[in-house]
Length: 116
Image 1 (cartoon, rainbow, N blue to C red):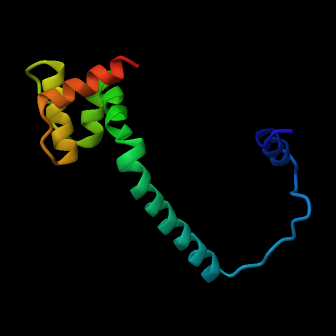
Image 2: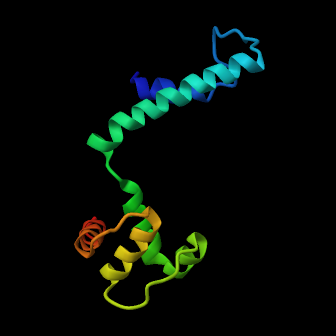
Image 3: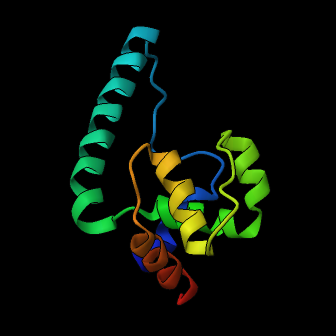
């Protein structure tokens, strides 16, 4: 069977075969969680810039398009009421990121997401 099927079938078992329970202290658990956090941060630092990209901006645009009033209320960012949707999005993203976002960038984000 494939590895995926083996994992799915194994995950449905109430107990894992041939696994003994381990007793660990709070300090050991915290240490392991700290190691996992360091690993996750390092992996994110490697993958995000070169392989994954900033999906968060696209996700924010989708939420902004779906219900911008709720997003403005949730973030506390005042709405920019005039101009094209790309202009308003650029103002919102600039305030959210605390970094100016050009109109052209906002339009490119909109075009990309709308094209999916």
